[in-house]
Length: 257
Image (cartoon, rainbow, N blue to C red; front, side, top):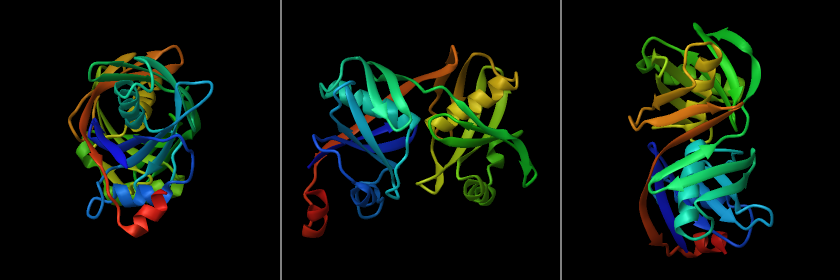
């Protein structure tokens, strides 16, 4: 079995293509395990689609599925192009809808589906939270220093709201800093594309951010976001890490077959 590993803004993914669409939640848990597997935040499987260049199955590291992953979409767009699955400008189907993407060298750009407001802002644990769906649900709070990120509070908010949790600092209208606790990984990650988009959209709607911004996650690798009509477009560098042929023991081989 051949897989590739990618990193996008610090989010890392295992990616492969298959002609067959099936449940790979167990495989995701095995491959994404950082001690006994390859190690990643998520598993992405590209499968054929009659209307679009391809469609994907996305799994978090705990084996749960997700409708969308911003940085994962950029990584898989690059994978699809270099492996001759799709042209430089492509359209592919996710659980959140159709995604438009472009690849130029090691830069991948993605247009997200239209953001949706989930609820009115609310107060909890001494913070004001804003709630948007940018492909998956997110809650965002604005803080003076994004190092005020509190893992315990993030975990509680994640389960209270069934959403990813973001702490954002606004340095100026063109530069934001964001730290994210992700569902499915159940921990803080080095970056989260849809979380950075939700943070940007929150700041933009409050009149605190310009239409074009750079967003800096924990990894310090910037992502560039802008409003395009009612949608969010974001782009940044993706890193191809390696391609490997994996040989499994009998138990895992049975899961893969």
